[in-house]
Length: 162
Image (cartoon, rainbow, N blue to C red; front, side, top):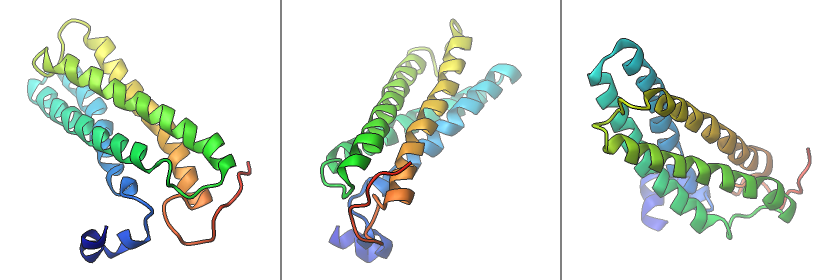
C-alpha cells in the first residue's frame, strides 16, 4: 500500500484496503432502493434509469468490497472471540447483500432497468437489500469501532464483550 499512502496518508494506519472501498456499495445501493420507489410511485422512467445506474454501480462496488473483505479476513487483527461473534456474521450478511445485488442487477438488466412484471417484488427486494446491508454493516462497524479491526490505534487483540 506504499503508493496509496502517499496519496492517502490515513491509509497507512489501515490493515487492508477493505475500509476504503466499503462505503461505495453502501452509498450506491442505498440510493437505488428509494429511487426505484420514487420511479414507481411517480411513474418516471428517467428516475428508473437513474436507479438502475445506482444499482449497477453498487453491484460492481459490492464485488470489490466483497473481494477485498474476503482477501482481508484472515489477516485482520481481532481476537478469536471477535472473529467468531462479529466477523463471521458480518461476512454472511454482506455476502447475502452482494448476492441480492447481483440478482437485482441481472433482473433489471433484462427488463430495461425496471421490471414491469413483478415490480412490487423488485422494489421490496431493493428495500430488503438496504436492510440486509445495514445489518451486515452494523457488525462491521462494531468490529472497527469497538475492537479496532480497521487500524492500529490501540493494542490487539481486544476480547469480545457484549
